[in-house]
Length: 224
Length: 224
Image 1 (cartoon, rainbow over the protein chains, first blue to last red):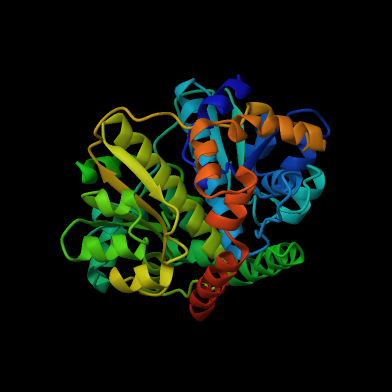
Image 2 (cartoon, rainbow over the protein chains, first blue to last red):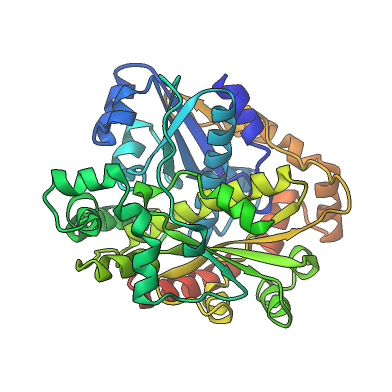
């Protein structure tokens, strides 16, 4: 079933027709659990029977170029971003089709953070970078739509128009007042939801530590 | 119609519920033409009535954090990649829904290449980076599905398994033999399709020049 979904998702647009991505479908133990642990054993990763890792893949295309007698010039950041776009577009198409087929999917936002570790587990060669991990399984139920900003927050006509402080406050009201979010604020005893994001979920020091790790990983491969 | 499509596409997954993206919909002259020129006047950009630019946007979320009395720690590469993923996931959801509504869409792969120029044209503040440009219009006809690699080329089970040279050659046969691709090889008098990619479409020097430009643009904003 995952093969059939991938085959359909493969019709999604791709940079210059190059298909600069690969998919690794992991379900066997102990590898699946090791992979879930690389994703910090977050519930979606730990609880799913399958983890799909969509990778930016310049390696395969480069091999084809060399076998065809020409040297590719992809050892740079621009080429990495093209492959990262290809991988993400494929990943989202995969999720859309999988959900249409009744499966449940959940992105693991920790994939690039843990690229060095995940690459090791999945035996990824250089120039194959894990970009989108997706936990896949049959959902227990329908789930709930999570809250979203009003369209005005992100839709601009002609050029980008910035907001006043008052407008920003108003636009984020839906987040500040969403019951689950109020719960997080209480649980962590923070003054506001924004504090939960900056101090609990995405604190600067953590962002900077993972930045250092992903940068040295990409630099070693000549992709930064 | 584009507003309604965006409203639906906004349900797509997003990093930590942060919606780190914005959309700029440009159709008025002379801005639309200026934007198409930033995309090197490629036919899809020059011929489309509307250009939709999906941006990685940390700026809006950072403003909300500051207004809420806390300092975000997003001035780093990791946070930029989260926003880039969010923008790309939204962009692909936008394209899927637009195509389901009968519109035609075409990604402009030159968006990050020309981020400095496009940011200027669209008045993007710092920490708003154009990631996916999409040309949108009513298509003349059905169009044709372009060639794709066999699924085996990109689908791996458990871990990544590399191919032999012979297998790579075999997997790319469908590309080498695709009539339009044979036409490009002839048109440019190259020994193979791979040479068209490495010498005409994505030559090393060009990739390196745009890498330098996008890197200095991101570095100036503390995102690299």
